Image 1: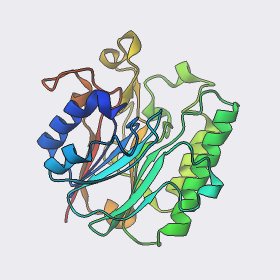
Image 2: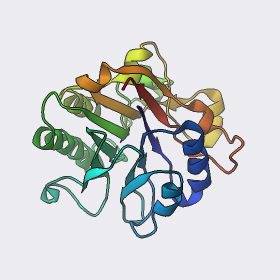
Image 3: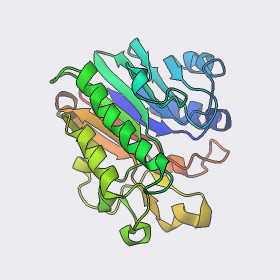
Length: 263
């Protein structure tokens, strides 16, 4: 089974690239973030033509999450199961069951600046994500939480930790909140298979030639429950997709993260 996650930074701008990547890599399940699409505008027909069922949760602004699957798509849940706990105006979470595994596509808030209301809301959102796992996923079950977490788990995940001192994505509180999610019983399989850093990075700023300079961060994660993680044979960031490539157009500033598991 091949599971992937990708912040596409607008499906409208990137659909041709996404179709080309899906056609070339044939993931069984693909989680998307930052679709920037409404549910009505989501290109479900394009993905159906590629053999995928799809579910989407988005408002067409600066968010939106989706799950594509060719191995079943059941028990779809947009947002947290108890939306009273969070601001439902920003669609950032979508869950579904695919081939018996509970898949969560997550787009964690950016946080903007340490200490700001947006930063505090980010910490609350991550706490709610942990609560969502506690409330909806049984211990020992097959679970994958995939997406753009807007947190670099540790200093290995940043090209130069000193350059980001005092910034979001690397603060102690954010990392502790992420560890709280992982502590549910998840494993960061890309890091396990590539224990040395810096990298592999999944995001590079468009500005200043950051990609070519290797100035990135690893903020897109595939967190798998123990039952899935022990089946993993390959986990990596598809850095090639961050290049312009043959599919044309400007790439997303994020690269896909891919996990391959034994059946």
